[in-house]
Length: 353
Image 1: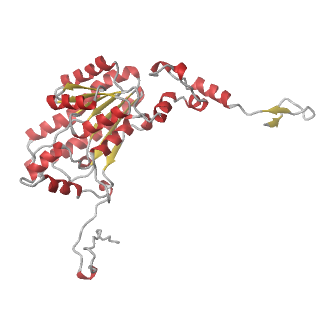
Image 2 (image 1 turned 120 degrees about the vertical axis):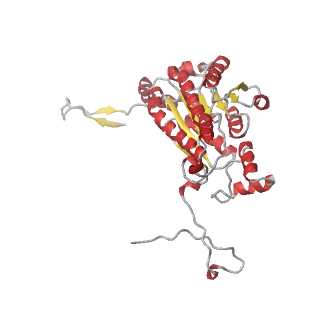
Image 3 (image 1 turned 135 degrees about the horizontal axis):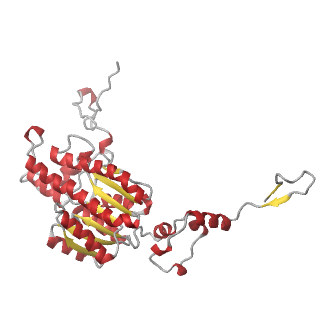
């Protein structure tokens, strides 16, 4: 408490006591500016004690979900390509955080089995993302089953057998890859936006790749498709932000999914699975860790939740720092060998003019 004299008071008048606004007064003033839409709460508001700080922040729903440890409580997600691999891992992560998940996949039997494994909060719909009508139906199915769509994760993708040289590019293969990886994702963005825009909220995710960030990691068809996804996300974010919708993508390094293992068996015929696993793990740069499906699922959970409420148009790279630097292994001179120590890895020399 302090004393203060108003501008109209003379010096011979006694000072009036002035008190700073109380917490309640601050909360009420903030509440008038940041009104909470209680109609979007998924529980009886009368049974929940709302702290003054939460009201003042205008973020009751977000704070409640975070404090209960279930970041997607009451949310509904549609994930394409979720019958296995990254999509399946993400579906499990979303469900464990309170969400209902619709699995959309071209693999009908496997998709049904996955939904059954994940429990009553998972359902399945057959979906070929190269067909816009299938993607539209998947969105409509989600609305009919769950009454809302809060999260759209465009995860379906394909790896193709293609020449690493652009001089030998097969445009038939290129068009097929672009149809799944790019057109499929864009169809998901289009139709999820269709139902999210009227609600003025939503989170859209897409799976890209480190091959879309750094050149030389894959053939032209796959690399171009993944780079295109990053560009689409950045472009669309500018429009969707005016509707309160966030859109982001995730670029992981090599993850040992069934899709990748199938491709590795093609590249290395006759090589056993343990050796293929070792080959993939050796591509990483972060000591003591490998990129796994759960790492991508955790990234998706962050971007889908209100923890990332102010993140949009972002490409979250999950690669252990691989794309931030490049080391060059040079033959080490004999003088650099020490007894009992392996060969020394040198970085590329710097030149100064």
